[in-house]
Image (cartoon, rainbow, N blue to C red; front, side, top):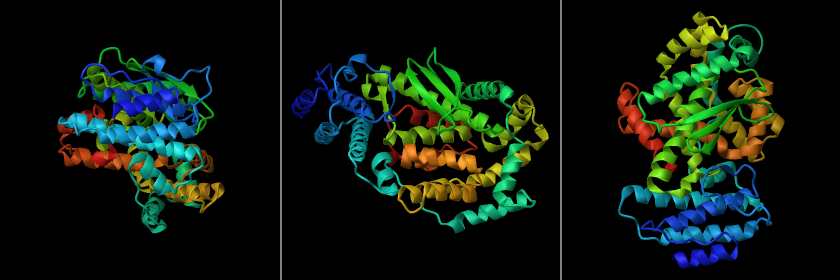
Length: 427
């Protein structure tokens, strides 16, 4: 089984796979890492992070191997993984299933790079192992009616909601202080429940010209670079959202725990690379978004922000409850973004019509809607990972006993998920 893959990897210049110790899956894991890195030479967005052996990276002085060659390697790797005897240990079975699913997604991405076109739902199933539910406009109309009563006045509802939200913009000169205070608070909540390795830390940068609002670039060695996009005004709620999502207990903690428990603890080198367009992203984004609610359930969040973040931003703390009442209803429109992306990427509406849909059914400003359509262009069906991922993670944690009124169990189950190679299908 391994001999066939070794020969195939050597043919396309991806190296050999020495067997070391008793880790019979290790050679195949190395093949997976090398494959992902090779695909990254064709797709600038594909490799989100890598901190494994430098010698596994493709030689920068040589031409990239063709996507056709890489497709054959990926297909053979899947076959060899599936031919392995089923491991007896549950965690080893999760590892094998993880490698199979991740490699299949890599193969799909290669097909896409070679011109294969999938529908939105076909693509999300093949890349992320999940399909978001479909909602018609009637589903969102109920939330729009509720918002019409919460934000009364003249003019279109989207304009009224945008004007209301503009009262809660963090002044640029106060953004860093507010964001760092939010990060500190999220970290305090996290370390009170999860044990993080010594030396974990991150750097914050403020950037422009991006299609996203925030990003965590994991560097390895328990370190992250967190970037916050300041192209558009940042509302006060986004400070805690980004602090939790990108930092604690979100992406930074997720990557730190994977490195600590799986890479260093078990020598599983496949977790030193993160291919963005893969099932791992649904777990990463789903835990990062659900982590906001784990760290700060709704009532605790309003209390904290009213006492700490609103004053730092120079906003009236008395307005916090009404603001979060409006945001709670706006959250019911979250899946409208998926609908806009599905229709746009399936060719049923234009980019301008997709922005119109977002303005109408997510009540975004035109600028934010256009920014989000640029995100669709760049990341396509990736959008399902945020809302569907959060819903799947929430259901998983609560099904195992991590209800909101049982914070100890909630954190324990959530932390175990962050430290495991679980797939969307396992949720």
